[in-house]
Image (cartoon, rainbow, N blue to C red; front, top):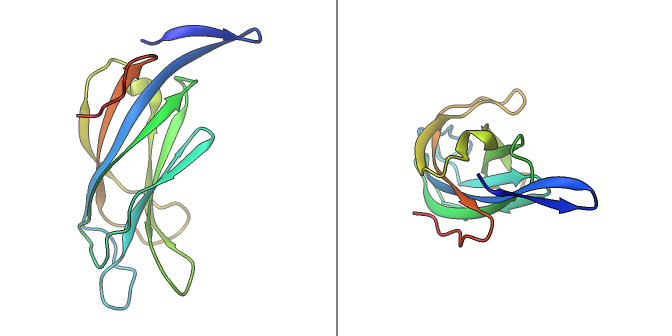
Length: 143
């Protein structure tokens, strides 16, 4: 389960999680054409990652992974789905949170997660995530 490293008197757990945003299904239509232009935003500790935008889809396939450096196994990683808009600001389509401690056993987890509202927006659908833990020093290559 990783190793401990001392930095200025603090003990840090150093590891990585490969978080793959595989696909979404039955997402909420946000555009006037009855579709959306969804993308994934991942907030992990002090970094934010974004996937490519999939145009005019309620069942997008991203197959995009992000390598997250983890220094606190008690932390959470926030996954948000947004509808890309050119003229107005992007709209949140839902979110979910993953607890880092649930994934430190080294096994690849492939699961569907139901989206929840971020504020009061109407939400539907799920996102498929693959999550895999890597010890510090291991090359993080997701399966």
